[in-house]
Image 1 (tube, rainbow, N blue to C red):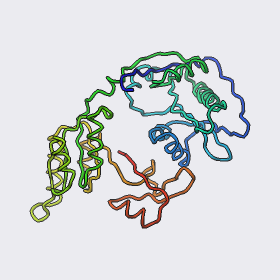
Image 2: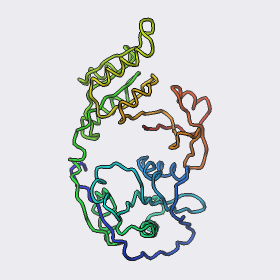
Image 3: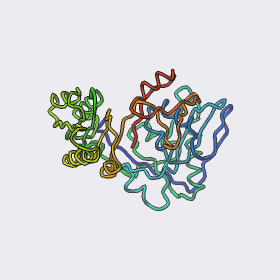
Image 4: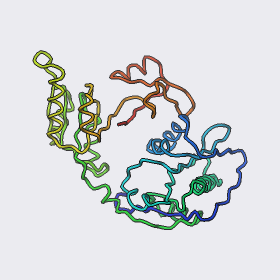
Length: 319
C-alpha cells in the first residue's frame, strides 16, 4: 500500500555465515548474470529487477541448468531515493534484489542464497550490508530471524511517491499507452504530473485523448514543403522545452529525435514494442527458455516480429 512505510535494514558482516549445499542444486559464485538468467528474472518477478541484477554481481541457483533463484549484491550506480543515506557510507554494501521461483520456495533455497550473497559482500571487504526498501513486515521478520537484520532507516512511501515529476508525453498514434499513464498518474499509481502531450500527427487519436483528459496538447507536425528537417527539429525542441518537463515519455513516438534533443532531456524514456537487449551493442535477445531471438528495432518492430514468426513478443522501456 502507498501509505505503508519502507524500511532499510542493516546486517552486521563481522562474522561469516554458515553455508550448506542443497541436494540437486548448484549455486554459482558471485558474478555477472548471463542473458538467460536476466530474462528469467524478468519473467519470474515482473520485469523490474533485471536492470539491477545487470549492474551487480549475482549468485544464481540452478536445477538441471535452469535458473530457480538468485540474489544480487553490490549493485552500482542505482539512483533510488532510499539509497541516499546509509547506503553511501563507507563499508556498506547493497544486497538485493533477491528471489526464488515459486515452485522452489519453502525448501531453504532462499536462506542459502541470502547467506551466500552476504558472505560475498563480507569477502569484498564490507562491514555491513544494507537490505533496502523492505515494506512487508513478514520480510522484516524473515531477515531479522535469518541474518540478524535490524531496521536502520525509515521512509514515508507516500512522500517518496508524491507527485513532483513534471512529465511530458510524446506520441504519434492512438495514444492507448498515454491514456494508461494518465489514468495511473491520476489514481496515484504513478508519481507523475502529466503536463502535456506533444504529437506530430494532427489526426492522431492521442490528441483527442489529451483534450478529453484536460491535458494540454500541442501538435508539432513537420511541414516538409516549408521547412527543413533541421528547422523542424529546432521547433520540436522549443515546444518540448517550453513545457519544462522533468521527464519525457516516448509512448509510440514515431519520429527520430536528434542528439541535441536527447541531450537536452537526460530523463527521457522510450517504450519500444519489442524485446531489446540490455547491451545496446547486441542484435539479439536471450529469452527465459534460452531461445535467442532477433532484436526487432525500428518503427515496424511488431510487423517484423510477426513476419519472422517470432515465438516471443513483448515491450521494452529504456533510456
